[in-house]
Length: 134
Image (cartoon, rainbow, N blue to C red):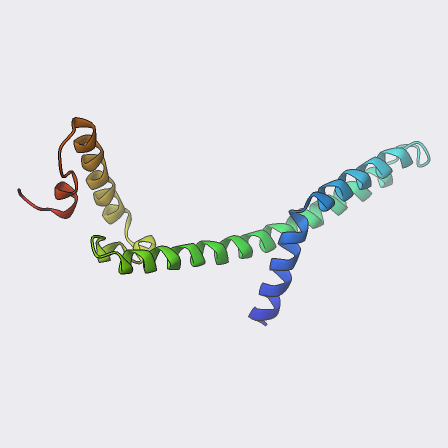
């Protein structure tokens, strides 16, 4: 079931993000507007567009979220592989998306120190990052 949902959500997300989908949506709205005088701009006429857009929006939220979650997971795994492959990188950065807020804040402070050292022209600003005391 997960594989079927993944395929469907991926297909619909790509389709919905295409220029053709945008132009189709605009055309649908134009047709709806043109039909307004024929239906005397009735409550039912308005309800059709409101209901349709609400249902589409509701379903698209789940499909787009699924696609975004997959892409985020894939990017994180690619970054983890790069961190693992680069000998100078800190391996504790692998899987950092699961770190606590306190751990993330500590690493953020370390990166701020590196930026400050780079701005000041220090030769090896990564010493502060690695915790070296040279």
